[in-house]
Structures are given as C-alpha cells and as structure tokens.
Length: 290
Length: 334
Figure: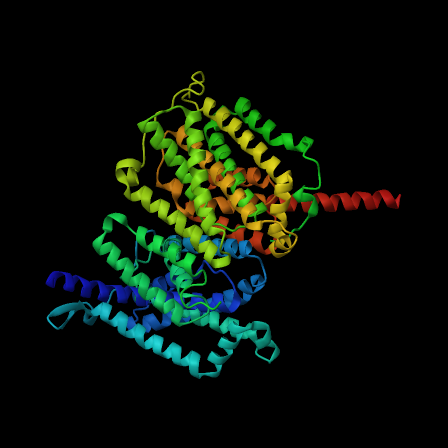
C-alpha cells in the first residue's frame, strides 16, 4: 500500500512536469488554430528550434542557462513572425489539404536543416549545477529540474491567463476567436493581431522545447515524433481557449507517465485509444465551444 | 478543395478509354523488356502507385484529408505476412484476405472517423495509424515487433508462375494487380456514385439538400479505398518477402499524401505520376545526401501549395490549355 502510494505520488509529480511542458508547447497551437482556423502541423518545429538555439547560445556564445532560454524563445518568436507574414498569411483562406501539405513541407525543411546543422543525435543544453540535485519534502525526494519546470510553467500560465483576461490585447484575441468578421468590423486589426499571437505562441513553444529538453529529447525528427502528442493535447482540450489545452496537457502528461510506469508493454496504446473515445464523445474537445 | 479545371474531373465524359490512357501501361511494359535492372524498383513503384490510387479515391475524390492511410496499407501487409508464415503462402489468397481485413477495418474505423470533420478527423486518422503501429510494435509473438517478419514464404502464383530472383514475375504480378485496381477506381469515379462523391467534396451541404446520403457514400468510398490500400500492402510483403514497422508508420502516410499531391489529386493519373517522379528522384538524389533530398521535397511542397495546386498533371493541363488557346487564336487570326 505504502509502495503504491509512493508510485502514485511519483507518477503525479513526473506527469505534471511532463504535462506542463506539453502545455507550454501546445497552448500557442490551440490559440492560433482557434483564432485562424489554420491547421499548423509544423508547430513542433518552433519547439525544436528553441531547444537547438538554446544549445547554440550556451555552447557557442557562453551564455548562462536562464538568459540562453530567454534569448532562444525571443529569437524563435521573432523568426516565426517573419514566417507568418511571408508564408502562413497567404494560406489562411486555403483548404485543409493545402494547409496540411504546406506545414508538412515546413517540417521536412526543418528536419533537414536541423540534421545538417546539429547531426542526428539528441542535443540538450547542460543544466546548471543547482538544478541537478534533489529536493526533500515529506520524506520523499524530487528532482530539482522537474520542480523548476513545474514552477516556471505555473508562473507562465498565471501571466498568460491574466493577460488574456485583463489586457486589451486579450480582449481583442477573445473577440476575434468568438467572431472574426465582427471583430474586424469594429476596428480590430485582425491581421496584426494574428501575427502577434502567432509569434507569442511560437515563443512559448520554443520556451517549452528548450526548458523540456531533458524530458522530450531534442532530435532532428522531433517535429514529426511529437506532433501526435501536441495535436492530441489541443484536440482533446478544445480549440481557441487557454484552459482546454491545460486540461488536455495534464491528462496526457499524467496518463502517459502512468501508462509507461504500469503497462510499458502496451506503449502508448491506451493514450491513443482514450483519445479516440474522447473525440467520439466530444468532437470539439472537452472545453471546446460548440 | 477548389475545382480548378472542369476538364480534369472527367465525369462529363463517357468512360471510353482515350489514347493517352494507354501510355502508363505501355511505359510499364517497355521498362519490363528494355530495362531489366530497373524491374525491382519498378515493382515497388507499381505498388506505391496502387497505394496512391487508393488514397486518391479518399482525398482527391472524397475530399477527406487523412494522415492515417498507412494503417490500412500496413494492416494488409501484416495480414498477408502473418497468413503466409502461419497458414497459407498462396499469393492470391493472401491478397484476398488482406483486402478483406483492411476493408473491414476501414469500414469500422471509417464509420467513426467520417462522423467528424476538420481537426478532429485529422486527429482520429492519426490516432488510428498510431494504434496500429503500437500493436505491430508490441505484439511481438505475431508481428515480430521491431524486427518485422523476415523470409515470408510465397508460393507460385496460381501454382504456375514462380517468383524469380530478378523480380520479373513480381513486376508483372504487381502490374496486373495495379491494372485491376485502376480499372475499379476508374469505373467508380466515372459512375453516378463517383459523381455524387465529387459533389460532396465540392459542397456537402448542397448535396445533402438534394437528398444525397453524403455520409454513406463517403463511408463506402473509404472502405473500398482501405481494401485497395490493404492489397497494395500485401503486394509489398509478397514481393519483398518482408514486412516491418515502416509499412504502418505515420511518416509513410505523410509521404504517400505528398506523392499524390505531387502528381495531382482527383485526377486518377496523378497517382501514377506522383510516385514515379518521387521515388525515381529519391533513388537518384537521396543516396548521396538524404538531408538535401528532404529539404528539396519540403521546398517543393511549399511551392506546390503556393503556386501550383494540382501538381505535375495540373501544370501540364494548364500549359496544354494555354497552347490550345494560342493556336486557336492564331487560326482565327488567319
């Protein structure tokens, strides 16, 4: 019984850490999909780019861990802004097939560039010493790194939710998700709003990718391998909200950790099966709007 | 999906064969007789053409964007492999059983998937292929897990034609099966059923309004397509005597979609042109540096989406139309 309780606690802790990373990466995907109806399969590219840029910032320019993380996120955000204006914006009105193909094309390019620049092996920025230890609480030990992941993601979520609920930008985003044409007709520049939101979402993905490099290994095939997980989080949570993917990410994070702990011989089978069942019951996700 | 050139859909024309439609078959036979070194690669291309053809029925004519079609391809491949290893190595029985299994699985999963649309549909197809992959990966006693099934025994076709070392029997076998599949799909898309399917692709609400059972039509097309994909998978197992995890991977689903779009969707022959161009180019380019190959394909995809929707055949169509317009203008000027 004692051992079972301990394993439950361990699964909850590791699952929440994993879920937080999934959330940081996927929340931008959810908002941009809800806002623009654009099926962006290439979202994982931004997370991968964050991870690689952080490695470069630390190894080549000798930046400490925290500034490197911030720099990587900001750089990816800026880069995605250019990409959005130059390419994505042309396809907002295109069909589903075009959007899917276009973003698959972007993934191919990103995979090739990553392999040319960094080689096929996983890369991770070295953790600073103070994150390598363990915390003790209530007679149990927890890795500091995962505690930092949970803590910083919690702060991020609080800022994000406050921003969307309290600021003018948040109100404009909510208006545009609810009814784009109406938002435009009351004078909201939805084009600029899309670009800024897209950049923010990509920067968050880069933050998640770089911060979570020790949980989800950064390899050139990252955008393909993790795509299913990001899409599951977004689709079971519901598009266009902040709370939806949060719920989805926690469910998947804890569920996946539990499956790998208790029934490793089934791999991720139950996650996929549960996703199917859930989508049949609620095609728009748990918190999606009808 | 926008209809770009009404001539390309072809449902207005009677299903009589045009001269140009013999071209692929003549080319295939020419390769068989003139270039024996390319026969093994040719057999592989024929199999992928059949797979792309099955996908065209769903994506090109049905307008259903799926990322999970390799689930049916892989299921057919594994069914044919397991059947041959455990029970019966006759290739035609293997094809029939693979078609039946993939068709039934297509019916069951299609009944679920086609109730949704947009992101949920895409996600469900991804989940299906992921589930099949996990089963193939973890059910090691039957599927061989990550090693796959090696040395799958294959008896002679009809008890007469033995598979030879140079792959010549395999090539003709694949060609015959592809021709049968092509004839089936061609008949379907030219039939009233096919026209209704295309109508639902263009505007499903209007088709519902005129009383067409859109969901049932789509489900039927999806099931047929899954069965055809299963046949293609079984062909791959029988001709290579091997089946592995790459046959059920999500990457294969993406690649086959890329090949189909490269050739042109909803045109029937896009499924021949795309895989041919893709696989031949990959055979030449990817050997030296696979990175540049992937980058090239990515750039090409982006360019196709931005500038050349309709793929290779779409571009050829446009040039032909321009040429005709010019020559008719010249004729009227005289």
